[in-house]
Amino acid sequence: MVKHIVMWKLRDKADAVEIKARLEALAGKIPGLIKIEVGIDFLESEQSADVVLYSELESREALNAYQAHPEHVAVIPLVKGAAIARTVVDYEI
View 1 (tube, rainbow, N blue to C red):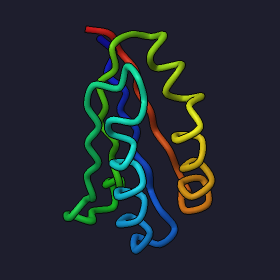
View 2: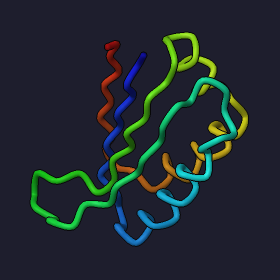
View 3: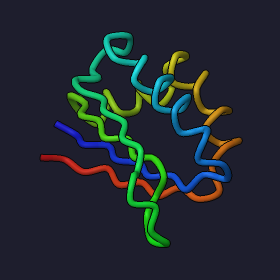
View 4: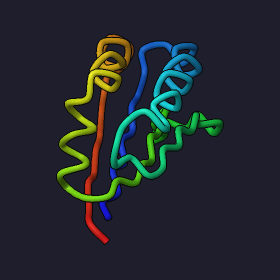
């Protein structure tokens, strides 16, 4: 299993709600995507990211397929346009 975690700092935190909805809508649409969860930060500290994506995938191959899947690719322009910083970690368990 692979865990894929991404955090974004946004230009305008108001975009977080749409990003959350669009990412969570991927559930059940991409083979190999076991779980997807999106959180919006409430602390709003200087160190905080605004949005976090937590997902579990069956394998590295499933992660590659997820990243190239048209449903996921369609969300990328929204997120890239809203984000000023992105941090990601992928690991196997």
